[in-house]
Structure formats: C-alpha cells, structure tokens
Length: 274
Image (cartoon, rainbow, N blue to C red; front, top):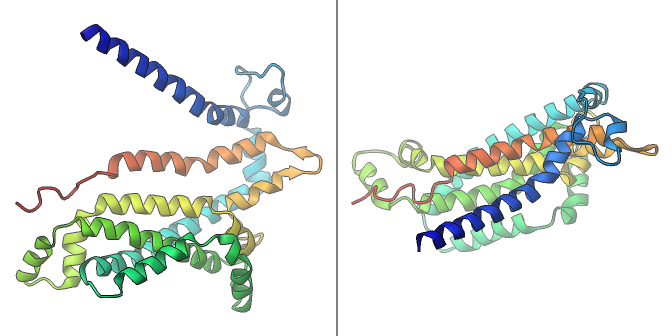
C-alpha cells in the first residue's frame, strides 16, 4: 500500500516537473535572448551557453527611450491603483452594508461596463479626450484605466466585505463608532488580504493594457506595451531588444504571483464571531 502511494507520488511529481518545464521554457528563452547578440539569437542550433551582453537593454532603455516608457507605465499604474481603491473601497463597503432594492441592478450595470470590449469604446474615448484636451496626458489615460478597473474593485471587494460577519460592525456601533470609523478601523484591516490581491490585479490590468494607451497617449506619455511595436522595423524585428523589453514587462507579473500566494487567503474572518 505504501509502495503504491510512493509510486503515485513519483508519477505526480514527474508530471508536474514536465508541465513546469514546458510552461517556463518560453519565458526562460525570452530572458536568454535578451542577453544575446543578434548573431547568437539566430544561431542554429540555438545556443544555451554564450557570452552574455547588456547591449540590448542599453539600446532599448537608453537609446530607444524605453526608460521613459517604463516611467510612464509606473506613474499610470500607481495612480490607477490608488484612485481605483480610493473610489472603489467605500463603494463596495456601501453595497455590502447598506442594502437597497436597486443594489443588484447597479451591480449588474457595473459588471456590464467591465465586460464591454475596449475596442467598442476606442473611438468615443478618443473623441471625448480630444474635446476636453486630455490626449497625450497622464490624466486622460489614468481616468480611462480607473473607469475600467473600478467595477472590478467594487465587485471583488464587496465579496470580501460580505464575508465579514455583520455582528462585528454592530458591536463597534454599540461602542460608539461611526460608520466611517467602522469602515476604516474595523473592516479595512480584516480585508487587507483581499485589498492586496485586488490592488495587484488592478496594477497588472493597467500595466498590460495596450489599446486605450495606444489611442490616448502620445510620444511623451506612451507606456511600455505601446512602445514595443516600434521595435518592428522595415529592416526586421530587433528580437534582442524586444526580449529585453518583454523581460522587464513581466516583472510585475512575477511580483503578482508572489503577492497572491501571501495574501489570497480564504476564510480570513472565520472564527471572528463565536
């Protein structure tokens, strides 16, 4: 019986290792290519061992201006997350604690706006931002990103607030806490794991977004995804620099995976009320 279980575990681990290798191989090759010269990138058979160089990173981020694109992406992402949480947290708390007959209608409306394809709104967004003078500005793209992330924040955080037993809020109210204090000092600490996960999701959505950034930003405010097509030249694709930029773009995704493991904890309020 024990030998049979050991064999099953060995088979399971072998399958998982094979799956992991297949999954990580493209990313591993992306990182390798970012350190290769143009000759090494097209070598046949492909080279795993080679003389590494930082020329691709230097050419992309210093000579081609991707350092500015990186700065733009960071600024837009931070403001999008900050404003989205500042607006979404009170809204999700209100939906969770103050029930009305139209709650579900409003929530479904928010969900519908989140599911609307961005390409449908591309032209209206461009015309609107052009009319109010927000093209090629941080404000325009941040407003657009917040508008698309806000329904996600409200829906996700409402679920976490719903998981908090209402008896906790009622006890705080008996002690003389206002609803604002209940929200800020009682409920927010209890949903900090969900808050972290929501913030990371919003950061990734803003960081990877391409279409809205393409139509609303200009040369001075373009984000990293918008700058990548500039490496596809008539003389050919500069794969080394594409790989260098792609490697840097994936860093927030790796951070996301680490944070989700730490903060996405099911049943964080279980046992709070006996």
